[in-house]
Length: 467
Ligand code: GDP
Image (tube, rainbow, N blue to C red):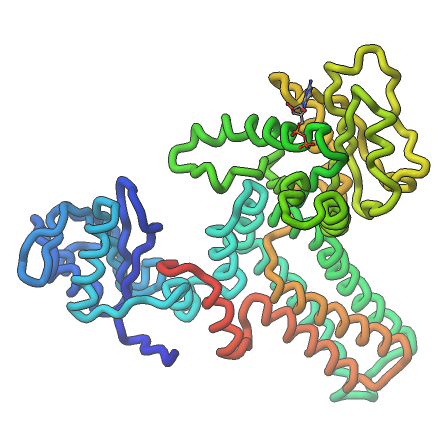
């Protein structure tokens, strides 16, 4: 793990596989020299100014051409890592990028560990730890809202928020420390009360941030939605209709694989991962009982349950729901097969004695899973239920916050509340200063101040190679 900041690292920056272009990134003191040794073009990378792109041939150790490439030059410190960086764009695929990588490694570059480029950027002061974590979050994001939140953190929104809170804390701490050093000056009795109030205001600001996190996290990670209901009411058909609608849009984006969109839909930039409990029934065990148990447990863990019922035979399908396994999560009811209803009375809202009794039923809609656009009412109901599931807090203002940062924020909050209580109780200013310092330390660690090597290593270990 020992890092030699003097060595030069290399890694593919693009995902492997068939692609028009692949990018290989080299960073370190030997980057320009290595590129020069394996590049034939009108100008040598070693002589090129920064931020220029050179066109030519990449050649292997014997001087044989490997591919026609573009070589981008970024000289230290004006690069992603802060070191000399060379980015080689070649044709994609299984062979060419591997040959280029192999050649560079034979010439002395070391394969980069996951996240090592960003780690160097962090060590060279190009990014703080919060921004570095946001890089990983941005690459991992699966929805617009996740990408926006990560982008906000990368752009410094989280760091600025932390800095602002820290500045207020420093001012408070200075006053508390002045009273330790010069107790005689410690003015009127009202003094501690005023300080306690300032402390409380800061704590409340952090508390508000903490309270917005679960919603923000869901917005970023997406919601799980389970489709449940009696057999044969059209759960799979509805799921296919929802996903099919989306797939038609998504498949226009080149390179989008079917697998990744198989059972997710995106509504207003938020991913909804759909699970059809019918699928859970494909089991060798005694079918129905197990199915019901699994449905019940899926319903416990989901963010939202869609209970599908048969509009053509409402009484029977409500009876088939049984009376156990109540979903504790919010529910949207889809009365499917509305095309077969033939004048039968609607059953809306009559849930006494069913698993839905006493549950939050956000909406009831009628659907025809097998008709074009027949699932649209359900899609609309899902969209309308998002605010209540995400906690309503409008906008995407909460910058992406990692689990590590959330824990630190909670620590800072606890320390501030202790300081506030201490001030109110007229405790010694030494103790108050300890708590305030503790709060500062936690906030600082959010952006990487004073974190130990183990934490830094753990953060970067979660990155992909080449980042
Ligand atoms: P599941 O067991 O709840 O997943 O139900 P399926 O999706 O497998 O559907 C059961 C049957 O009902 C299939 O033959 C579907 O074609 C049919 N079906 C599903 N939705 C509708 C609908 O809205 N109207 C009509 N008429 N048939 C439907």
